[in-house]
Length: 248
Ligand code: PXP
Image 1 (cartoon, protein in one colour):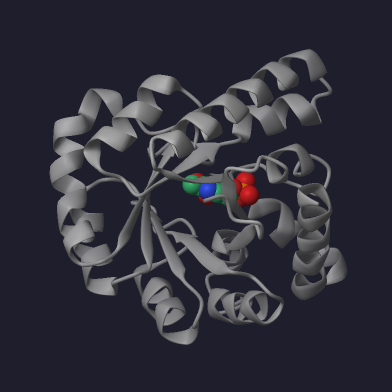
Image 2: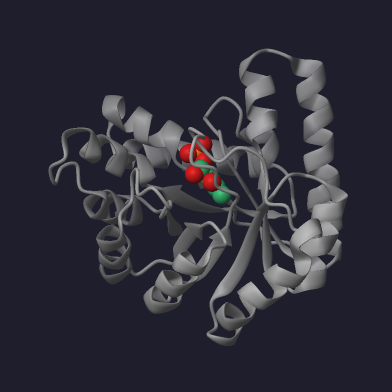
């Protein structure tokens, strides 16, 4: 079943990045989550990184308590995060690769080569009723491994597509869009729910929003930046408008 309405998850990590630049309490990511919810967001995503560079443990708990829309807890597949996420009981966990030195999540999760460990890792989440999403590149091996280990969702990494678009390398962008399109279809055929995210903006979102099998986009950095100029609620509402226009 292909959903008509495309859900929009708002990643609020970079509100915490700005807060942490000064070490105080503002801007508060919980307030951002509440504004996003009121502006029509369908979910809130937050990434508790090992180095706590933006979202911190207390933020995650406070966001969970404050919102009534789903919380998507983004995390590396480590023992520490397993414990915290099990205690937080989010709607979903999204497993991502994480390297200390990276500026943002580079590349997708290696599922195919780590399937036995990941099967054990996600088992308790599935038993607890928490949905499991894997953030992967549009790569057939990874899609098939995600289905094999029993993930509920894949989130397709749009970072390369967005970079190629933003750099004006349109032939290469179109090739990457072709891979995203094919893997969205393949994953859907295997019974996986398909999400997409990373690097999306008003300018590059439309071809991704138009993919019929994609039912949710997760967007952060661009919208938090845009919020400086037009406010968070207006920034989200404009993204909603662009996504819906592409979907129609
Ligand atoms: N989805 C996942 C799994 C991510 O890791 C990120 C970045 O943290 C996003 C979506 C949002 O990406 P961006 O901040 O570039 O919009």
